[in-house]
Length: 164
Image (cartoon, rainbow, N blue to C red; front, side, top):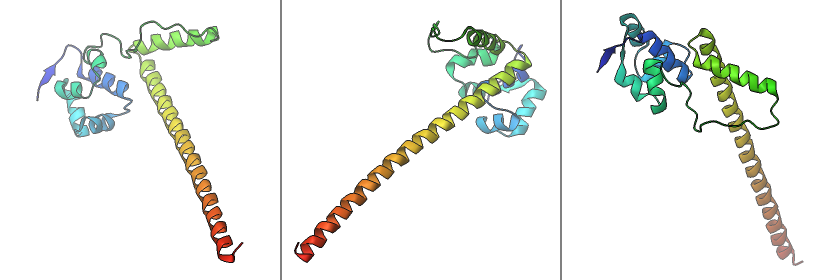
């Protein structure tokens, strides 16, 4: 197990790791890493982290940021994007402010990142609910179709039995 002393305090590394993974406390961090919460607390006290364990649970594009605080915490898949023409200016201004806050190391960064991750999760939950509702509607349609076919078969069988 390699533990390293860093010029970048262990607490900062742990906090950046937590923020990028949407974790709220040491118990959540420990659960994701597969260690006891007391281990994470110990890292904070000793100002030493298990480098290999942290790296193993990081996306490659986040490793530099988590370990050093350098680079971009949220790497986009494309370079510069042009917003749609119908987006109001106040929305564009809010997005720019949000980007600046997320790049900072302030307490607002942690709050905002947590809010965004919660919102993303709620969107995912809503999308899953909608997808499930569509699946259920499709199954209901198939079921109704099967019932109609069975009724047709029963009617045909009944007419054959009665000689009609």
